[in-house]
Length: 115
Ligand SMILES: [Zn+2]
Image: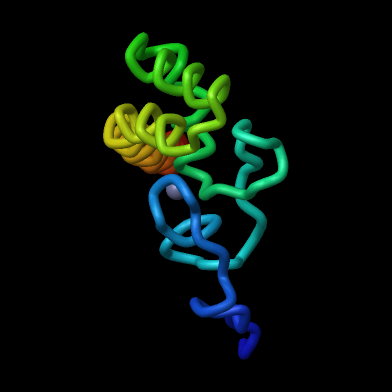
């Protein structure tokens, strides 16, 4: 014990896309975030990392905004594009972790009953 995250909230970096902590709001500064494809050097939170990768694939509108933002070096457009998809990504991640939990619970249950 006693090895809590001392980096704490004030030194944890902020994601420029969602203004949340990196890598996430639950454990600020616990580990590095994802590298943004905006410049390949700026860290963003884990969620936005996934959203950044998914948005251009699933949303034409997001892709257009992100492409234009990159081409014209307008970070606001890049952010706007990702934010279009961000709530969906959040739901996806949530469902994913819930499914994993359910799966683990099922596996645990089967393990017990098969004994
Ligand atoms: Zn973020």
